[in-house]
Amino acid sequence: MTFFAGFEESRVDVGGGVVLRVRSGGEGPPVVLLHGHPRTHTTWHRVAPLLVAAGHTVVCPDLRGYGRSSKPEPAPDHSPHSKRAMAADVAALMQRLGHPSFAVVGHDRGSYVAMRTAMDHPGVVTHLAVLDSIPVAEALARTDARFAAAWWHWFFFAQPDKPERAILADPAAWYGAHAPGKVEALGAENHADYVAAISDPDTVRAMLEDYRAGLGVDRAADEADRAAGRRIGCPTLVLWSSRDDLEELFGDPLAIWADWTTDLRGGGPIDSGHHMAEDAPEELAAELGRFLAM
Image (cartoon, rainbow, N blue to C red; front, top):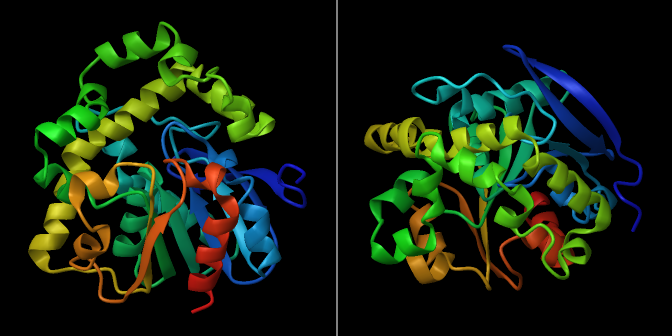
């Protein structure tokens, strides 16, 4: 499959000094796909054309701080890299592209942005799909020795200065960018985009700010919603990778998301490793296509 055939790449000013790199294509009901760490929007290159073929307009941005999108200056509370700020970018992006309402799909860190978009902008999100996650507040509330051992990077990345120094000493080694089979697994163009991103010191710092926000302002936003009884009202789908550790650490993800939604449409495991858009694009696109048609 040709890399993003029929898609156009652009830069879109979403306000507040933030410009997002975006790739979009297709016609029909719009869906925005949000990547995780440490990827860029190109992680969706195998899924996006399948959703276009299914009759959708597909929009794939680099989240603020990631890839070639703007990197806001960090603040003491890390709020410029919060999921609330990223969600506002997504809502503004889709409005500027002429989509007053849209579906949102997020993977990994992007799933927290997708959730926050649906929570903060309920009038514009028609469908929500979250991949490989439970809400930040739920994960932190369940932190134990197993979680800390498996997801230690959450806590290391939140430390000041040291993670930048560790990663930037050799970004490719840190992320295993040149491991055997990595280029084939990602696809050559996607791999090149990912390596360029992790090699940029400003991007690395911004990605770490994402995690610092996660332990502070993002957790506080989730807890405020829970205390106020707010829930996501649009149809919601939850998918996770069968060869990752989400179920092992947290049990049934659907049971957790049921407390955050009013219209949970189900979901389940995808036969893949963590990066399901690269590992199992056909299965993922089929699940998303069925859900978006509801």
